[in-house]
Amino acid sequence: MTVSVRDLTKKYGSKVAVDHLTFDVRPGVVTGFLGPNGSGKSTTMRCMLGLDRPDGGEVSFDGKRFRDLPTPLHQVGALLDASYVHPARTARNHLRWLAVSNGLPTKRADEVLEMVGLTNVAKGRPKKFSLGMKQRLGLASVLLGDPQVVILDEPANGLDPEGIRWIRDVLVHLAGQGRAVLVSSHQLSEMALMADDLVVIGQGRLIEQGTVDQFVSRYALTWVRVVSPQASALAPAVEAGGARLEWTGPDSFDAHGVGSAEIGELAARQGVVLHELSPQTGSLEDAFLKATASVQEYTTHLEVTASNDGNTGGAA
Amino acid sequence: MNVLRAEWLKWRTVRMHWLLLGIAIALPIVVSILTAIFRNDGAVERGSVYELVLGTSYVTAILSGVAAAVVTSGEYGHLTIRPTFAAMPRRGAVLAAKAVLTIAIGVVTQFIVLEVSTNASFAILGSRDILSSVSSANARPAMIGSIAFVALLALIGHALGALFRSAPLSITTIILWPLLVEGIVGALLFAITKDEQMMEWLPFRAGFEMLSYSSWQMPEGGMVMEEGLTRLQASLYFGAVSVGLTLLASVVASRRDS
Image (tube, rainbow over all chains, first blue to last red; front, side, top):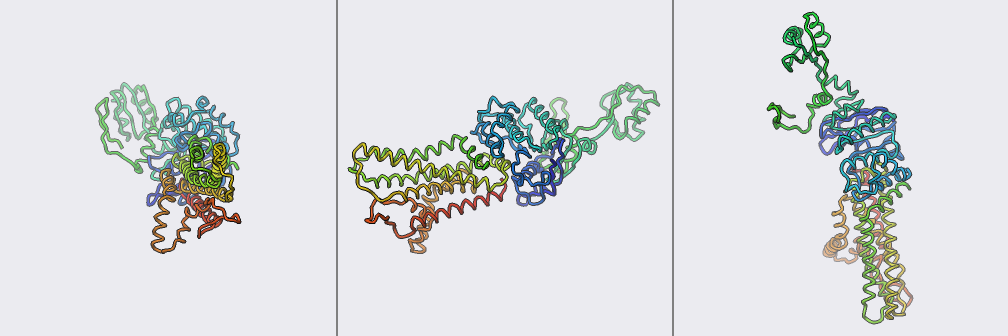
């Protein structure tokens, strides 16, 4: 099942939260949904599920509007916020009413509780749950109808490292089964590990949609790391070729604007011994920060002092 | 049908709902029983027992309205309305299921209150040999009217919960509307129009006619009603107000962001 978002627009008064947003979520892959705080990710997801009424555009699930799905839990499992549970209703009963609403047998509640490891607290009330337990309960509700589309808004919030890894494995597994998975997160290192596609938005507008590799190669810096006992002898020749150098140690530098093959050939011609010659690419985080630098909703102008080396830098 | 089943499952799996229902049932029954136990004014006619029981219906009605308001506004307060609408996107069906459930619970609640209160009162008074054998006016229409009144007031509580999405505001409204607001509006209406008949059209004033009862019996067995709306007219009018408010709440809740 493919999810198509077309020209989606949502306004709150004069503020445009989602601005003519268009993207697709393909089956069989994890699609990361990225954007700075206040960029419209959660609003987009609520509009996708018919919870907020868009001012324009449409969202379809294999051509059908969400509200036209007779038993949506069979097609779309969504977790927008783990706190959307009645604090006094047991975990099991929370899942049972969801199951009944879509014609699922109530025993399905016990099955998904086991899947997420909450069987022991099935009769517990969410008001006593940790955020991580609530996230697991939320994921259980997502899995209830064995849906073809999974939509999750920051599912790793509040999870410990084991939980984060678990949710990553679950999402990759679900995508591997051919499901379309859309997941938003601010944990970019996690996103880099699990996402295949990315949808990046800022101030409600689409910045980029494509694969993670495409995004990183487009926005992140690339350079070549050179480590050599004769680095100072090699450096002038590299600079003469148009590269910009950043010294990272007495025997090493990073060369920007030149390829590793060119440096290797220069080193060979000069008889310079190389201990390392490796192409480097910036992280997804670097790419994200560069791509969204102009659309950050909330920025700080405080100077942050590094505690270990006394260096200072501006935080944005 | 799945929507109704889901809403019933949601209702019955929260202890607070049962607590409110228990209070709505127990309070008038306790009042009736204590009155029967401690009554000490000679022979008691059956009609005065009905008067007391029907009088306490107002308590049941208000508590049922409060419970319905808590249930519906609680969905918004806890934001469980979002998974609800994500699982059942046809909002009209969800709100209709909640309304049906509210009415059904109101009917059952008042039926239990009436049955237990009257039978217990008669049993206690009978055991004390102070229950008069003189027959009273037929209380059945007022009994049926009181059941409908409780159900409709619960429906109003549900509608206010869906409209305001706030438990305190919904509860305050359902308590103050009949007790305070209609009194003030009625006084203003009278001051402006000098016409007492106008006040009969205040919703709760009309609603109270549904359960009005006098033990005084006419020779032909008919009821004496004050000038104004008959029980049937009052029932239809109060019912129309309740249903209208519910429809308004459904339309508003269906159109706005959840």
